[in-house]
Image (cartoon, rainbow, N blue to C red):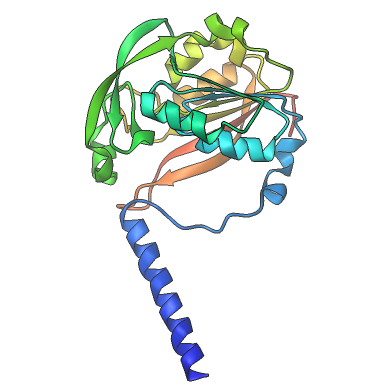
Length: 249
């Protein structure tokens, strides 16, 4: 019995140590509820097409495919190694197609600041607050990428009714909206990264994104996830949920 108590104590100690280490790096361990419980509200919207803008290595694409396995997913990721990993991650999903380009307000060739922590990569320069909160993202290289307008390439996509658009482009969201208004306007639901404090130089904050989505007929319905500052616990970012007025929950 004493041995069992000792083993239990060791397990609790190891768990606490690992959680503290993750917290110090800006991460948090959380118990995840089964998708069938958490996302029933999303399934009722009968989403048939998903456009994943800023797909990185397939984190959202993998999750949304698990929730909506019948939906066609179009993913956009301009960073070369992230795109390769995205394709590998989703290789067994027949209704998935990836594009190695970024989306913005005009077709162009530009440079992206590729952070060593790839999800923090952005066309915009990283602000000091971001570097102070997440110092492991500071190290970066510069990579040339191709930018297209979503509205210009929409003809290459077979977009069925009940569209979900996810936008996670580290401060470049307003440019994506400007170049994709016709397509985004048709969506039933948007999941958009929104920032409450400036993490990238010149980025739009919550009020601007809210105004853009509201003008397009979307209502704010809370957050998919949110990011806390490990220094003081304040909310820095969230993936906001915007649903078309009179189009669902």
